[in-house]
Image (cartoon, rainbow, N blue to C red; front, side, top):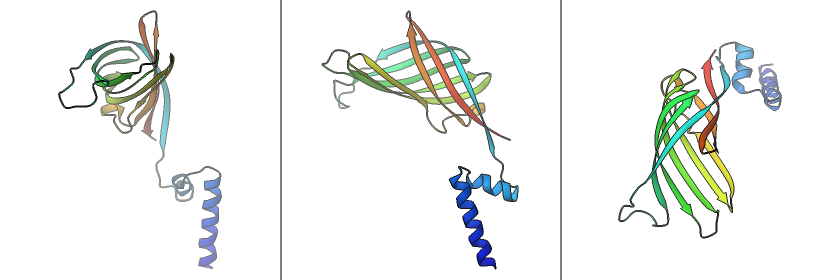
Length: 173
């Protein structure tokens, strides 16, 4: 009888998984002992100032066609913070085609929660058509921003830099 009961549990678990329930959800429904997390989705927006400073290439580092710059930002609005980082960029011989990657450490408050986190940038421009992805590095949040995940958009309108930040913070129930 135990063998049949075990086989039944495996079939039930498989059906739950097919329905999109995780093992933790199944376990907590049957045993009531697993604490789930509540994920809160938020949107932050505001403006920022940025200073890019070209860095002189070290004698034996990289290709001279790759530009390196330091990044200094001041965020305003729902994100009140400063950031420091570095960018690598390449412009091709084709007008309007380029690419860049960057990492920046952001320190301040996000909707009143203090801490720090890291943003990773990946941008390309193909003959003027731009694609940009700015993502929170997983597990980079500190302080009240532990568990932060999200993506940021950057727009420049009439010379003013704007950000939109869709993010989640996992909070224990």
